[in-house]
Length: 253
Image (tube, rainbow, N blue to C red; front, side, top):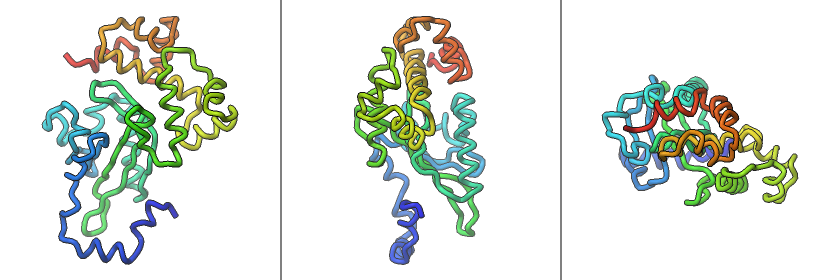
């Protein structure tokens, strides 16, 4: 049994929670965690509550009642919506899935996301709740302890996105064999080290396309692509659109 699930199965915990006045354990508590995005959705995937970290610099009216399809790039929205449907259909939580998430400036970053189904008083699943924290960045290692090794490796990859990054060099820096590194990424990230390196470069390029005045060619060069055509092809494979289209669609103003 999943440890996180078993925490809520004990009679003592159940009795204690049942004895509390409803509403004391409030979603507002998540306002005290600025590095954590928190949200509630109904069964139609519409956002009904979210904390400031999720809202960022947007207005409440721009998010309230909207769906991922209305707020996110289509390829990312498709993944989020499918995960919600799976959680509601199975009734099982999703813990610490490492995935690309849109950032405050319209770029993307890797975050560890957990979702749980929400039931009404009749026991019917009527929505989902989720939290998301950044993976492997300078503000700390927000993933569970068993994933800290992979988070440190992720952070090192991001710090070197301007260079050519070889899997063998990543493995050597981490003090493991290439095969062990492959297993580590498969178990924790559901991807390969090579694919993650590409995605790290593209997610950084997204941020720079949105947040800087560099030309598309300069952005590509800044994440280690000396050939502009290769950058465009690589970007399109990950984001399903060209760098120019991405900048045009998601750059504010």
